[in-house]
Image 1: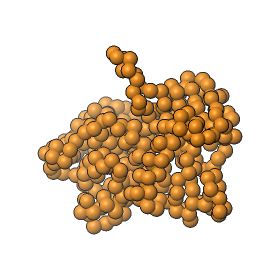
Image 2 (image 1 turned 90 degrees about the vertical axis):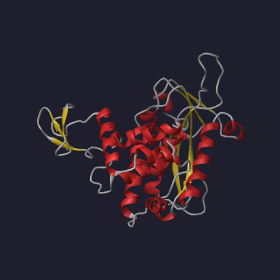
Image 3 (image 1 turned 90 degrees about the horizontal axis):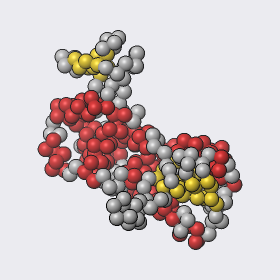
Length: 302
């Protein structure tokens, strides 16, 4: 969706509200009291009413807009800006673009959207051939207590991130031609370097029939218990350029993106920024449809 299309469709608070309701109707409403999914729409009250227990649900309830006092139009503008800017916007720049006086509600809004993106991506598992490695991202040094003077693991001001990529080349079913691109990525912040942390993410994020390629890190000793096959290779320049090519491309691009846009990121918020980066990267071919997908995440990704 480009700027002209957006302003033509969403030129008022009522237009945004009506569109949000129509999209929420498509996703369905679940009653918080009895879990029933059939509702009436009470136009006079602007709420959903459960057909079974008569419990009422507001239009925002159960979405990331719940408890927010910001207008629908502001939320729509934020989703539009986040979906159309390739490199992302800081909360301060978002505040400036929206013309709002207070920074705190804007900061909360963009982080809620980033959390919803992460929750949406968490629904899907990676499959086929998967590359996996870890990257070390710079965060505010006060956020993590680590020893000084080290590089890589244990370095001060560094946060460990497990990065994985479906590296099976896409193939055109008609021509048989293989694409040079890959499919989906995941990036998860780890609190430590233990095998337990890695295993937990493997179990959540990888299909059990997957084939996983990694280096010979001691944190990866149990991966074969969770997937079809685990292939290891000693970490060298060759393996980085070939076997683990795509994860290192993602790590490099993510570091440049976050450093260039946000400069200093607190360790406890790094996952949220990675959520946005991975979400948009995984939908890099959606074009103007990306706004619609962000809206779905806002409705369902709580």
